[in-house]
Length: 387
Image 1 (tube, rainbow, N blue to C red):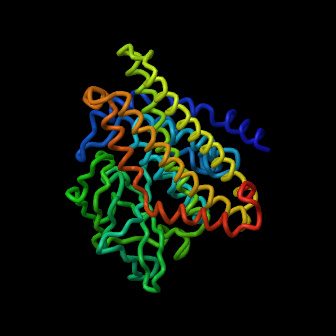
Image 2: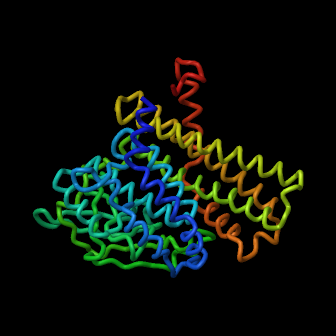
Image 3: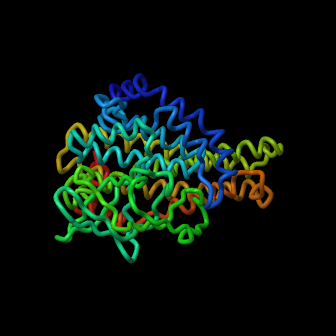
């Protein structure tokens, strides 16, 4: 089965994988030029549009490529996200958010909604997922038949002024959380850039967004209250952002090698040792990536409760392992290049800032505790629990 999956990935999606590799160098250059809160990597975004990445995770019958929607496509999806992350973590984060939205639409949308939002993506609309609450969180209430009103604020609204079709979660009268696809370019909203003064990921434009009695049509309500948090999709989504993060670690290894070769420092025993450690860490990350793709395929083929639980635990293990891998690679990289390498025109300092910021995902201790609890409460041996 795994051989068939890999063959499917290679034959049907190899062009997207190749295109994602070709974007890396130009994206890396633009990342340096746009390393500020007022900028956005527009040239890389344009390449993603032209390359078909924004429509790849749409069902084939609506003109897409089924990327990440059916078994056999998940390895290609994670490799693509990793490659985009190698060039620029900001664009990796933006693409991951766009694809996350497409997956949610495919999972919870009606046929009418799938067709409608597929056309939006075909027209170049950028999607995302804005879920993090501000103190004045979002509220959605019905004001008349088939029309709702969205008020309140979100923070970490990645891609502000560029994402025009975010999926926004909001509280309903009954206390449930409802997803809605908001046509931001047609809504009454206010953005607050002063909220975003981060160490890294500066050009992600993760501003605070306030919705000012924005009208939302019923057709834009996605799924039912609480669907956004359905498992295993909610926790399993960590696999995708971990793939993006791994891309930055892999790029740090590439840049470190290039730096040492250029300065003719390849014969130093300690440098060899550090490069060896970095290579082991990155390769272990790639093995986690392959395992995660396999677990996603398993669940898509057999969406049972037990397969869902295994997916959640594996996703928690992967995101934890990738964080540890990235942390180790960043530390070894800095030892290799020293103070000189952490200066311009080298990319190390910015990549490390971006990666350090992106790694700060919510509840790292809780997800690790969940892994331990699952292993301890399983009737199988520890080595067989996730098989």
